[in-house]
Length: 129
Image 1 (cartoon, rainbow, N blue to C red):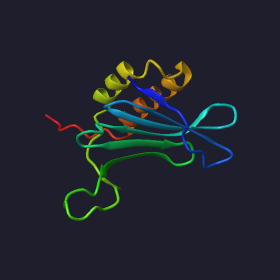
Image 2: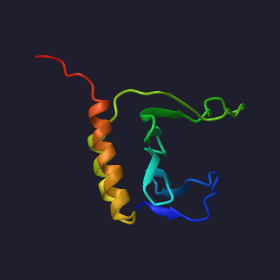
Image 3: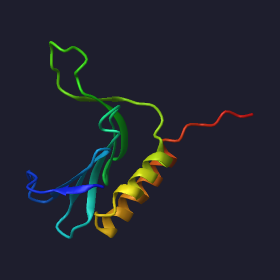
Image 4: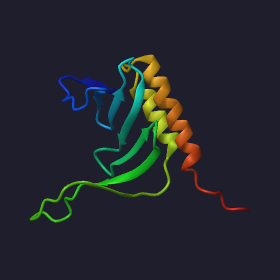
């Protein structure tokens, strides 16, 4: 279950950063002064092949894989976002539904709606039969 991480560093006077985490997700959400989500990063499959679905009101969606920079044991490199294939929206939506019960209903519904919107944006064309 996603649990809220307390004591998250705040860098922006106009937005508040929130962090929720479990063994599959890291969810970072930024809210405005009214408490509305204005951006989020949903990092998933964090212990295997981590990817991120990010949304921001002004810029829309991105979906990337997180390259942790750990391929060579003698040289630690900084993590970076790299291109990734199809967004497995059905799987991510199901995991989010199962793991997000401790997040406020309004935020949970908002992020869930954005997952559905991303599914449409990142869907791959089907092969005509």
